[in-house]
Length: 129
Image (cartoon, rainbow, N blue to C red):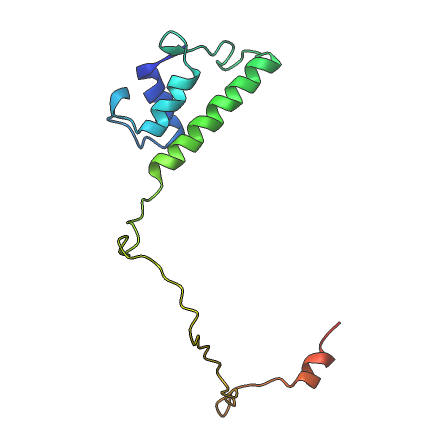
């Protein structure tokens, strides 16, 4: 059985001790929610999960789910958070259909600087398999 404080130990093993000095209550919500979802009577029952034991197919499937869910929760908890984009939410977008303009560039490509190796299309075709 994995109880709340043992859950912190388990999480630390999967996160390279990232939450070493945490109590269960201090863990990020993403991680605590995995425990809450899988626990019954404040513990996660994991029979046959010790080295040398032989879990059944159902127990093995549950252990994989537990490890996968915890790994995803750790990744979410450690993911960088990005600041909101800078835009004024009070502005209303408007669509103008009167005299729309589109700018099209008519500039021709510039030649490569002197001494810069340039492969012509004919040379390029010769090197094709």
